[in-house]
Amino acid sequence: MDIKTLLELMFGLLTVASAAWVAFAPKLLHAGFSLLFTFFGVAGLYVMLGADFLAAVQVLVYIGGILVLLLFGILLTTAMPTAELTVGGTRKGQGLALGALLLGLLLLAIFRAGWPISENALLETTAAQIGQGFMTTWLLPFEVASILLLGAMLGALHLARRAGEDQ
Amino acid sequence: MSLHFYLAIGALLFVLGILSMITRRNAIALLMGVELVLNSANLNFVAFSRFTQAKPIDGQVMSIFVIILAAAEAAVALAIVMNLYRQQRSIQVDEAHELQG
Image (cartoon, each protein chain N blue to C red):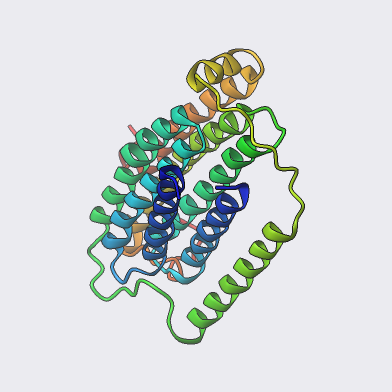
């Protein structure tokens, strides 16, 4: 087994194990910190797939941005002493059964389908190609995304403002 | 590793995200489930662009757009959660059944 396969297995295991802890951890803060390892594992898998720029974006945006936002959200809303984190009893069983069914269906589809597999040559500089793509082929979606981000920022500011601060 | 390995990891992430969305009661735990699902979709995009005849950069560009959407979604959703917490002192989703502010 060469080192690349070993690394892929390691990152895959890290991703799946920490994602399972995100889904089943009894404490919300533990789930939040476990999400850090999931994002990191996915970034590692991106590197293994030859998408180095995307891995950097994953670490910057997900770990540096979204995860910090989620952790702030957890810390700001902890004053709920009696709140239960998960649904209980039969409903949890139903959820687990549904999840197992979905997983079986997906794995069946993945391994039975005849994918047209052909390993592409690794790109040397993904950042340059992605940048050129944004300025040529993907220019319109790129601009729309920037307007979306502006709208989301203004909307989040408006929503998070306390009532009565309108003036 | 082949395409199947990455697709299986993506499927596991997707199912764990869905499980997190349907068994959690806390709104922020639900958001974590959404992030897991988006990550699994991204992983599939990148794996397909690496292992099939598609242009190799297209999947990565698509993943970046998904990450942009995820960032916008997280910001707006957390603002809504904060609003809910301010009004009800609770972010349990099954207690938030009134649409009128």
